Image 1 (cartoon, rainbow, N blue to C red):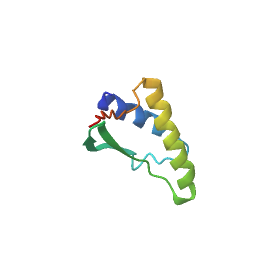
Image 2 (image 1 turned 120 degrees about the vertical axis):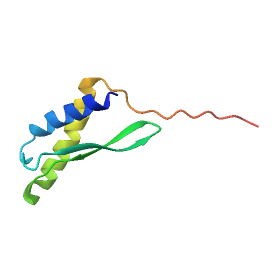
Image 3 (image 1 turned 180 degrees about the vertical axis):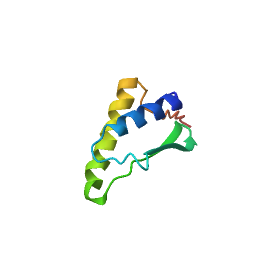
Image 4 (image 1 turned 60 degrees about the vertical axis):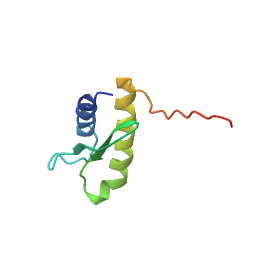
Length: 83
C-alpha cells in the first residue's frame, strides 16, 4: 500500500461524507507501523448529533476507498513445526 495514496484517497472520501466539518479538516495521519504496514489514524470532525452517522460512513468510506485502490488485505503467515 502506498501510504501517501491511501491518505489522499481517504481525505477525498471524507470530504464527501455528509455532516463532516470542513473546518477543522479531517485528520488522516500515520500513527504507527507494525508488521502488517502503516497504521492510519482517521479523525473526521462533526457535531455530536451526527457522530454515529459519520462514524459508520467513515468506516464504509475506508473499505470502499481501499477496495477501489486494490490494496491487499493484511495477512499474517504462521509457520508451524512439529517436534
